[in-house]
Length: 246
Image 1: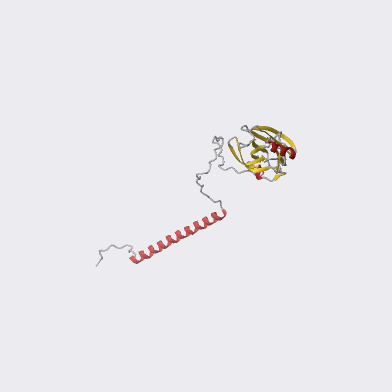
Image 2: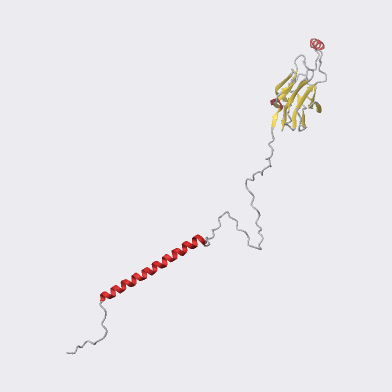
């Protein structure tokens, strides 16, 4: 009997479809793998020998953006909060003040003492005091200091001591630098004088001289005056806080 099924090309079995699909998947994966390997090779080659592409760094908070070409910056320069001295530039010299009584005393007269003095109600704790008792061993109260070229100015307050027995005496005060007289003043009780002297840069010796012009310097005459109740013109003088500044 004739068949009712139309004749023609027969459909391949289903297993063949699965095999072909698997082959297609493998082929696609192989192509993808080849492409990935090729891209890796290109990246490796360009990274070693080609130009490096570096992302621009973001400006930091403290960085200064340079002005564009043709634009003049009007911002003032920022000064350093702690400027440092450049090589060869020394810092400002430090001013040093010392009491003359803290230095070496040279050629001091026997009637000279170092200590405190009261002059017109003011206390001077680092003074040179010239005071005699009964008779002066030296009619001139002299003391010298070694400056060594280290000091530039000399200052002192000179006068008669507040507790002086002779309220009418006149004291004389002289300053010598390296043997040369530079200043002389006189003072009376309650009327002190201030002295300030600019010293030469190479000054070595400073001599202070205090005296009264009516001081008796003859021992026999001084003894006779004491016996007769007469004054020997004994000095009661002080250099109040003589000081030196470098």
